[in-house]
Length: 439
Image 1: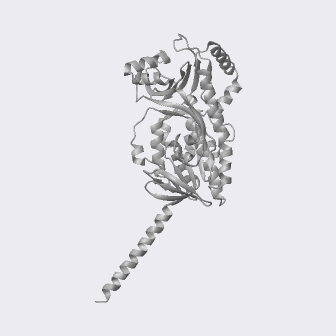
Image 2: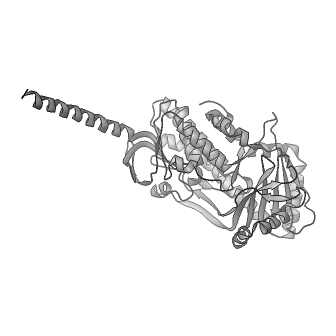
Image 3: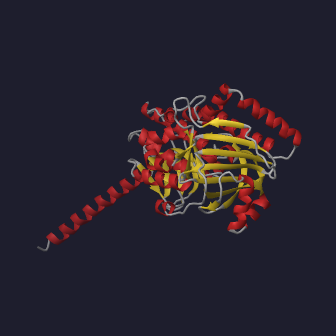
């Protein structure tokens, strides 16, 4: 009996040592990933879901974000909505996300474009686009951002092979020949083959990677609000080009519209600060009386506008996606769609590399991504900037020239069909997910 005590204690200590070693090994495994994504907003979550699902277990994927999923899920609507192109809906269908949001998405049946002064009695329609593609599929849907955010969070929670590190912040990282060691604020060092920067316009990862940007701020700000209309909108989107900037009405279900309203900065703040009656009166000046009485149906807010473009989309074992890579003027509603093109392209490239047994963070893999995405992103950003500059003024000669140009386009069916396909995201080298194809 006397000798059993020490033996038993030795066995207990041995078991504890084995358990500690097992936990240490588990911790080490849990801190090693193939892809670590910094930022868990729309583009970051979609990127994580796409990589985890399309690789079918071949990639270990993690997302680090400063906001826990539960807290992000609990956020209220901020009044913003997105125009999702047909290509973007193909991606979400392929990932199984679209079924969660489709009942809340409004298909666009047509787009009407006008160009006039604010006090003009008549606003003639200079250009009209049908909202459908040749096969009858809508070219775009309007979806409130909070609905898409919640759906992505719910879907991400159910995605196998996806790890969440939150609340968490990327502090710094060191690149070696075989990977990147990322120092997180709470979890400490985490190793990955590839670090994806999806952490927004002020991307800390982009700055730490030494990637510079070009761009500028606009003297304008964007006002967003949701209105309820008395008369039906019929699914039509309306773009009024006014001297202060574009004024867009994007249709939503239940006969609501999302306003994306560009004004000079100080004036935008004044408008948002008005009481409800004053704000609605200003909105009606721009909308006119065709939809009857207006009522507020959600919060309103004001946001700064800028354009920026990263000089490079990749660095050693780092890839930029979404707003970390580019930011565009919202006049055509293409910001999120351009980010989702990044997601589809990077997913296809990384998954292809993984299936061939290649390093997903190698220079060859990342250079393929940069070649695919940088020109398209730069073209889109600069095109939106030039259109905004061309239309945001009160020059009578320019207005006459614009009216002539829009009228000519309106009389050219082939040109209009091209613009619809371009807006739908179905021109050029389209990644498989955006075509609705499996990877």
